[in-house]
Structure formats: C-alpha cells, structure tokens
Image (cartoon, rainbow, N blue to C red; front, side, top):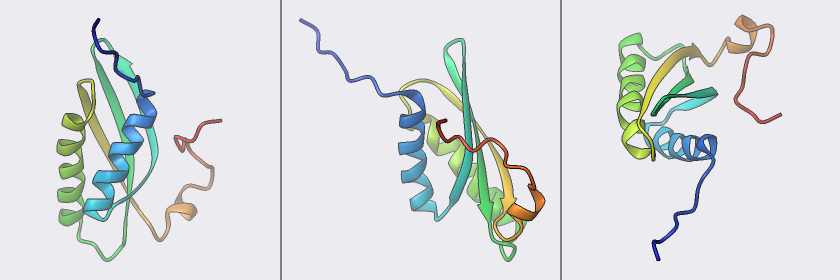
Length: 103
C-alpha cells in the first residue's frame, strides 16, 4: 500500500517557508497572495525595509527570497516581491490592502 502524504494547505506551506527564510534573512513580510496557474503557483510577497537600508541591499535580499522560496515548496512556484518602507507604510497605504490573512 503506498504511503500517503499529509496534504498541507498551500497558503500554510507558503507562510511556513516564508517565516523560516525571512527569519534567517532578517526580513519582515506581509500581503502574501498566491494563485495556482496550471502546474505552478505565482506568489506575491510585500517586504518591509527600513529607510536606512540602501535600495541595492533591499533588492539583494528580495532576490535571495525569490530564489530560495520555490525549491522549498511542494509544487513549482515563481515568487514576486514588492519592496516597501517600514517607517511610512501605514501613511502611504491609507486604505488597508490585501494582507493575506484569512477572513
């Protein structure tokens, strides 16, 4: 009899892996969205960076996340990141945008 594998909801698997990688890289994230298209997932993640961080360094860290997350997931995935400022995030986004939190 073949072994059955516990099926984890896609968003839970994505968040678990994001938590681990972001913790290791010292990143904060929110606004996670994903959709399945054919055989792969498209994942969008908003990353928060301090004003004091150079754009080049923020981009380097975002790229590391984009490269490291897909191999950690159980299905093929492509990751897109959106870089935001920690300090003025709430002022810039006067209306709450999608947070990735379940309703």
